[in-house]
Amino acid sequence: MATMGEWQLLDITCRKVVIPTIEGSSYDELRFFISVRRHSTMYVVNLLIPSCFLITVDLFSFMLPIQNIDRSSFKMTLVLGYTVFLLSTNDLLPITGNTIPLINFFLSLCLTMMVTSLLETIFITNLLQGSAHYNPPPRWIRIFVLHILGRLVLLPPKPEHQEDLVIKNLDVQEMVDGSPLSKENETTERKGTLKEDETLQVLKNLGRDLQAIHRHVVLHLKRSPSSEEWIRIGLIIDRLLFILYILFILVSFISIIIIWVNSYYSV
View 1 (cartoon, rainbow, N blue to C red):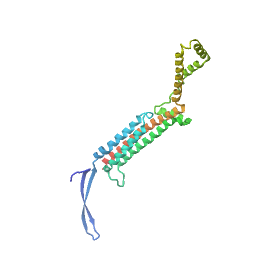
View 2: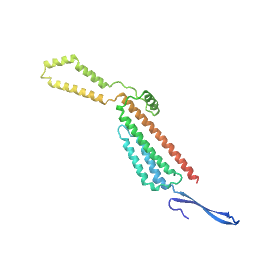
View 3: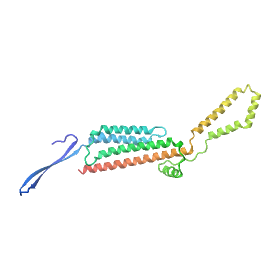
């Protein structure tokens, strides 16, 4: 007898059993017990290590800035690639019987975590991109998420800033330019040296128009307080789910390893 293929021959034992008959006689029966075990190297190299690599990439994808990069397309590519990987390696999986093999459970767990990560990214992206159209968050959400969970995930609430100094300066400059004294000075200059200051007056009007355009752009780009709060809530939830994702991966992998080792040495 020799070990061949994916099975490893552990032991062969023989036992003689005497079986009585109804007539009072008996006959001898030889029973052979063969102990075999699958080779685990093939499954580790072809299935477990690639799955762990993809789970690690999916875990580190949480570090991508969700406001600047489309993280959902990256995670969707990972899920699609892992699905194709499972279909291509389906022939390597052991045939299921009355009980589900542990490796099948492990692969299903990896796919479930990737899909859950994708759904979480879709939810956070929707929360960040649509924050400008949402109503202000309720008070209990601000207290629970911004103050409690924010400090828990090391994202405390930012202090309230004063109004933009640039806008204030523009307001003051516009008031000065629009004051009666300024108008009288401009009228006097126009009457006194109209031809000499024509170019200077054009530059002043152009500067005033540029200041008005700058103020309009700044006010347009400046987010409302409710939008800032929703964005802050989305970032806190994303950080919290990232931490929970790490804990779930560690607990799941450690549990599977313990079960695998116990089942390996109990044979």
